[in-house]
Length: 291
Length: 193
Image (cartoon, rainbow over all chains, first blue to last red; front, side, top):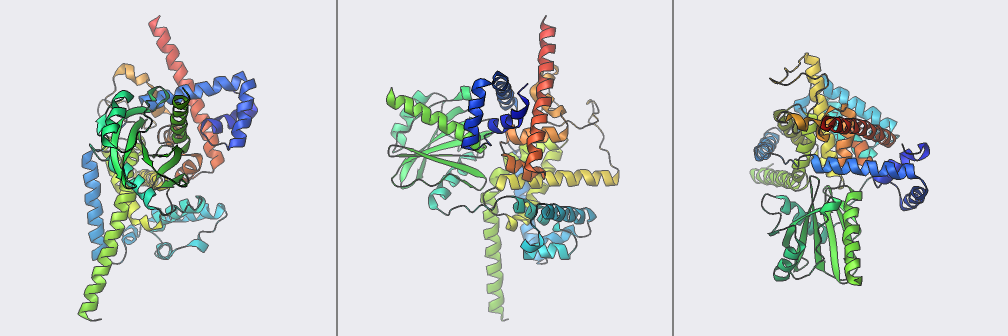
């Protein structure tokens, strides 16, 4: 049992939700509290077991094809009937209820939906139905901080390269969990020589490497598997300021540099999980350059 | 409007529709696997999960213009979850109770999960099985945090509860899973004796 007053902070610390100051304070507490140390180990053990055990499922190819076909039909139906696609939900009392509930939730959150309504939201309300989804979606964005991603070609390149790698048979050019296989492969196929490590014991298994072209050079991509998530660690040569860490199209991008090498880890893992891999790589790099 | 103007208007509309579809394909479709994984934990069967994902993707496409910022995955999960809840509500209203699949025990609380049907007996004690047996709100918060790795703010948005509730629910869910897990470990030790 963790000590009572720190239980909430224990979970927040474990999930990477504390700011640096609060995290440092909690680490100081951990030094003196064996109960919390044991509780933290227990949480870690269960998480590792869960992530290792749950199957890494992908959507079946038939489903992907079905979804694409449904989207195609939807697009042509919308073209034929300019009334607007939401109308087909009209008359569904549940949708109307959902819309009402979402508006109440938005109102409770202290940000009246009305003031921020968009034309399509307004139309959803006018029809008295069909606004369910729109209202729910809007309510979601009313309670989420408004995020504006910086527009930049590099960020686009990185996200596109990551998404491309997720397509069947695009993930790795050289498949190996052995860094002594991947590193020499890079020497012949890309313009940089990045640090290559496997962190399977820490939950980040090296799957292999790949060459990607951006920033006018053959950049290296190291591919890690973490639970069901793929993480690409890109590296290329560059100068000047690094972009700030950001989230784009649902993927987190974490940047760092080592000498003239630029690194970016891209994935749909959580931020704390992505940061953990970044620290592992940086610590390994640090050891190598000092050892 | 002249014919030429009409033709031009139609072609402008078509290209804006195509651009919208291309943006959807680039921003939302890559999260199909994640949506499917989440749906597998919500739905009763793989076939239900397929239907759920298809419905959610269509709704996402219709509501796509409302999407702002980079939080696509959490946004899509919200839609998947809402589709699931809508489906349950509709079944309840119609008084439909799907028949249990042949050979499977009927559970009071449906316990889905990627391997529920084909699991061997000794695997039924696995952590995945224990997770599947948790109450839905505990299961959901654990899946979103430990597997899909959403942060508290995103989980709050997806499950439509305040962040404080996410934190307390997560703590309770972890405690519940841990209790069941250590219980099965003890049983295993006993069985080995």
